[in-house]
View (cartoon, rainbow, N blue to C red):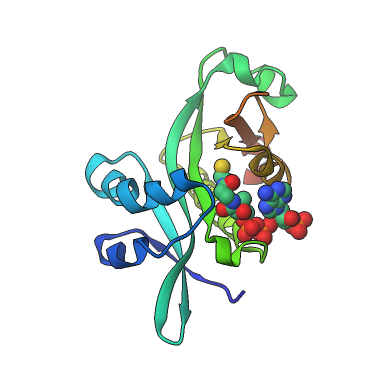
Amino acid sequence: MPTPRIEALERRHRSLLKGFRNQEASLVEYLRRFALRHAEKDLLSRTYLAIDEKEGVERIAGYFSLATVSVEHASVEEIPALSKLPRFPVPGVLLARLAVDERVQGQGLGRYLFEEALGLALELATSGPVAFRLFVTDAINEGAVQFYERFGLARLSDALPARMVLDIKPLLGEPGR
Ligand SMILES: CC(C)(COP(=O)(O)OP(=O)(O)OC[C@H]1O[C@@H](n2cnc3c(N)ncnc32)[C@H](O)[C@@H]1OP(=O)(O)O)[C@@H](O)C(=O)NCCC(=O)NCCS
């Protein structure tokens, strides 16, 4: 599919929300009912839309939401690079939601959105005002687990939803950090 535009969700997108379709009802409901409120009123997460435009008609092809998170030290102890960290909760950016419209799945948009989300987190980590160590998500089913394993996320729990984490330090590319 052609590369979609990524836009932070705002009120002007409201009319597009009801057109989004996904097999996971909770991901449709989140976008329709909560994402805008969480971004503008409650300050709980920020949502980014992939907007696809065909013959002048705009459609939401996919979206992701970002927030912050804190992961118990005990749950990352088995990851060698993290096991030696001080025994405090480890801060991270949470990929709170990621979904692609079911009519355009399997064409690379999920990967594109994941990379955009990780790219925003790495930008924040590199620009410096706050520090965090993990990129985190909660995979809702085994398909999602496999999807995130492709990007190097490690599964922390056998149960679903499964918390999964990526140590961002090796991606920051600054020796000695
Ligand atoms: C999971 C989801 C976001 C993937 O989006 P997509 O656009 O279909 O994925 P892509 O086409 O970019 O696929 C990227 C890679 O992941 C793999 N993949 C995609 N969905 C997968 C699944 N359910 N199980 C296993 N692998 C999967 C693809 O085969 C592809 O691998 P490749 O790069 O080796 O070819 C999308 O199918 C979706 O919205 N699913 C329902 C909601 C969901 O489970 N969201 C996950 C958040 S918890």
